Each structure stands twice: as structure tokens, then as C-alpha cells.
Amino acid sequence: MTSPRHLSLFVTLGLFWGISPSLYRHWGMLGVPVSHIIFLTGIGVAAALAAICQIRGIDWIGGKRLHFFGFGCAMLMNVPFALGLFFARHVPPTELALIISTAPIVNYLVALATGRENAAPRRLLAILLGFLSTAILVITREGMLSGEVSWWLIAAFSMPVLYSAYNFFAASWWPHGAHPMAAGVAESTWSGLLAVPFLLLFAPPWSPEIPAASAYLTVLLACGMWTLERIAFFTLIQEKGAVFTVQAVYLSTPAAVVIALAFYGGADIWLFVSLAVLMGALYLNNTGSAARRTSA
Image (tube, rainbow, N blue to C red):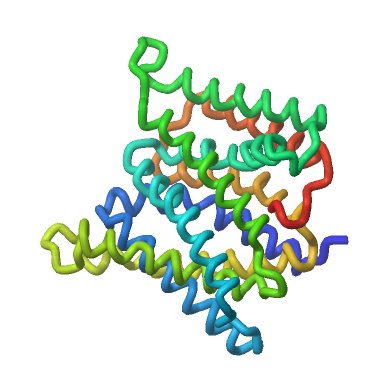
């Protein structure tokens, strides 16, 4: 039975997942460099999680295995994260939200191809509906019917594929005995550090093109938001399991579209048709067979 505490964590997780595409768009409009965002959020979330670990008496320093895991996760996460921040400057946040939300279906395809999951009729139907949802989204975008292909939109579909590689590594190389928050510290720390060379090479802080300090306020707010998101995620994974936690996508997907519409507009009937088909695909994907605890 779901307690009010678990329900509040579930809602927090879904809403924070949902607001991210709009945040990406906001930072793009302000001209905040992608490398700055990754560095600040990585170090900020790592510091906050480390402080929480210290208070709770959790070993967050770890050994070589933990840092190998954190480094690998950071490398695999930074690529789609950076692409998402970049694509948000060219793809409407409503459409980006739908694309990112196809990740669970891509994850199942990868698990199916690698033998980590068995084929289930409901989940195979989910794959077909997922492709239908993306086809509706792509074909009905402005200019598509007249033969003008939005290559930015097409390229954005690389993100859920790359995120599936991240998920596969995280599930396969989880350091034995490591606390989830300690893993979060290692991952976030390396995520920020890996962004430093790009920051210094392409967008040094002393460059005249760097926006004013006020443009970074929402980046700092995002550090706090994503720290709470990590706590909600880890708590639900530990106490309720992956099957329950992954259902937050049912809240995050429509929330992402509604939040993006509220701030940036751009609605049409086909967007909602694509959303409806995708929600059906996600339902079938998450109920076709029992998800493994490590594959969330």
C-alpha cells in the first residue's frame, strides 16, 4: 500500500522530471553555455548529496570500484544530457519532452537485444505504439508534409538511445555494497569534472560572450531541485522498487508537455495524439512483464 510519504515523493519525482525540458529551453534562450550548466549542476548536486551522506553517516567517498562506476556513468550521462541542452535550443520543449519520454521503450529494446529481458506480447505492442507515436510527431511537424525535414528533431531521437546505454552500464556495473546516494555523489562529481575542459576551451568564464550572473540563478535552483529529485528517486527505489518508481513517467510525460505549453506555447492536435499514443505505449511497456530492480 502506498503511503502519503511515498505518494509525495512520487509526485515530486514526476514533476521534477517534467520540468526539465522547459528548463533546457530557458537556459538556451538566456545563452548559458552547455558546459557551464553541466559543471555547476554536477558539482552542486554532488556537494548537496555528500552533505546529506555525511549527516546520515553514509560512506560517500568509497573506493576505486565506486569511482570507476561514477566515472563511467558520468561519461555516458553527459553526452545525452549535453545533447538535450543543445537540442532544446532548436527543438520546441513540447516535442523534446515527448522524445525524451520514449526512453523506457528504448531501454526495453536494448534489454531485449542483449537477452536481459524476454519478449512479451504487451511490450512488443508497446514498441510498435512507441514508433507510431514518434512517427506522428515527426510527420506532422511544420514543414514536414511539404518535404522540409527537421533534422534537429530527427537528431533529438539519439537521446533516448544514448540514455539506454547509460542505464545498461549503471545496471551492469553497480558497485557491490555501495549506497545509492554515494553512487550519486560519485556520478555527479565526475559529471561536473568532465565538463571542465569543455568549459575552459569553448566557454571560459572570462569570455565577454558569457551571460550575466543573473542568468545562472535558475541553474543554481536546478541544483536544489535535482538533489531533491535524486533523494526521491533513491528512496522510492529502495523502499518501493523499480516497478513502482518507473511509473512516475506517467506523470512526468504529460507534465512536461503541459509545463512547456504554459511557458512556450506551440500546441496542435497532433501533439496531443502523439502524447496519447505514447502514454498507451508506456503503459503497455511497464505492465508487460516484471521489471528487474536494477533496470530502472
